[in-house]
Length: 279
Ligand SMILES: C[S@@+](CC[C@H](N)C(=O)[O-])C[C@H]1O[C@@H](n2cnc3c(N)ncnc32)[C@H](O)[C@@H]1O
Image 1 (cartoon, rainbow, N blue to C red):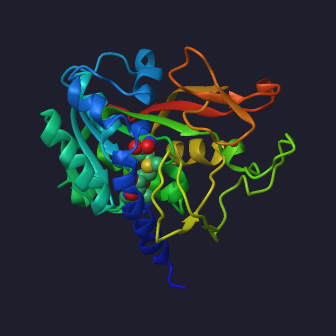
Image 2: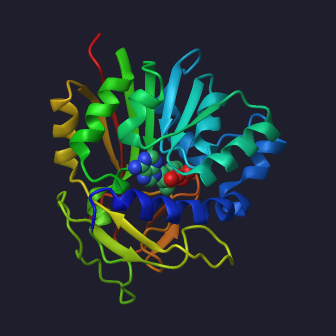
């Protein structure tokens, strides 16, 4: 198998799912269109950490159908969203056409982002919530982030915790079982799964994906090696989607987030990491 086949497989998987995601009530596209002040739950969760974004020049890597990108724009940032899936960007384009938000979208693979963005430099690189697992090398990703940031610029990362990604999500006996690699591996985890993480009746055609986990230490080490300074790291006991189906419950008053029903204090569910490029 060629080294870049993961791009073809993963892009087909996301292209297949993007229209269903945009049509699903879970992505709340109609609320973005109906209410120009509407901000999605993922961004609202981190709003105190994001601070004032007025006038900030931001890029959202792996922006999917653009909902979080629009949310950041509504907090005052001038946003560009980047994704390698044309179908996702078509949905993102339709969203801003209908909502009137001034957000640009660029089609590119993450590792090609600096060239695709015309060597523009940003005050904010935002990414996360199911993004890093699609990238084989966290070191290359960190180099891209560092290259995209202007001096003094900030990386803002909210992501599923790498410990969560190790767990067997098919258990029905309530046991939290470590099944998959924690540390980054050369070879991908290969999945072949119908369905997606939102409510939909659509039957998908492209179901094979290649994914990688990256340990928290590997992520931090990669960012430090790329010359960034870590300014904040918070591990959370909630995650924005039902990562372990049947074993989680939605937490009241935490922006629709999910946590383990039984002793959630055992598990880091997600994290928010911030880093800056020295001025
Ligand atoms: C789960 S979404 C994450 C976005 C956001 N959290 C959301 O839910 O809307 C993952 C996105 O990563 C994109 N993606 C995966 N691999 C990529 C790559 N190598 N380069 C650029 N985009 C990629 C997919 O097309 C998809 O839109």
